[in-house]
Length: 336
Image 1: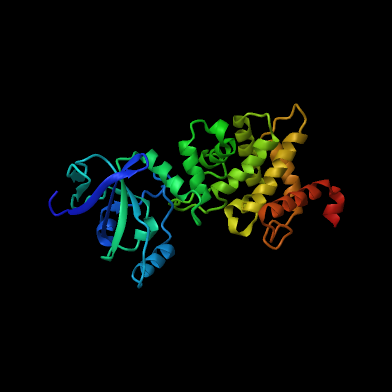
Image 2: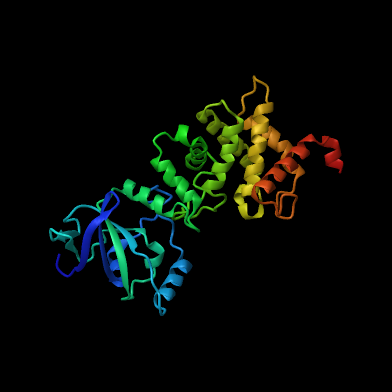
């Protein structure tokens, strides 16, 4: 491990986990670490994407008089010999990092360290030793679960990875992920998880928005099983995309794929299913006929009746607007 870096550390424990505590320059810690940002295309990683503004704010603060910070948190990945080695038997040990090696995963310091590669300011650190990536993700969630600015969709994605039985524990999340992951879904790879975005695809709703919408279906369509509800959600949104293709082709011009539209239309989907004859199959053709009757009656842009509506109250009002349109006599609406 010639031409590497040696960090003097104190060995101890953070509750039930072994850790190393110490101090090092921002330059050294940046060179030996990385942020395991979620790659939405492959599903690997778990961190949010870097917010450069947030990171640059900390860089400026770190160079100001009287600055301070809590310890940066890392996980020393791999085993002794995988780009690093520990020397010493007692409390005081030396961590030797091989030149060019980056074994330190940034569990809780991505934004503090992101733009500090050229600074020699001294920073405190705590390193977990040898956590698995699953354990690392769990600790990240505990540390950041209530953090302001951390994407709720990213935390939902973590839950999906960590739940033993998603269908029972978080059925609405399973349905939302089905819409995102099913290639025939109009939402395929178009729900923002908070990680590195899939290139070339316009973003519409977030995973958290779709999960809340799917909770409407799982709640109102009980006792249907989660697989059946996932199929209904898929077929309903396929019908919406078929009837209103511009909303998906140009999502910025339509509220159909924004929170208020997603919630209101999902309420309507539940209405359709609950009102359907027992012999009806609630498939894409079934939903397309109903959505096709309703869609032309409303301006779905920001200047229409749904524009300006937001929050839970706005979503309820939007759903009522759609229901009122359905109740109006067709001739009166057409001539009104």
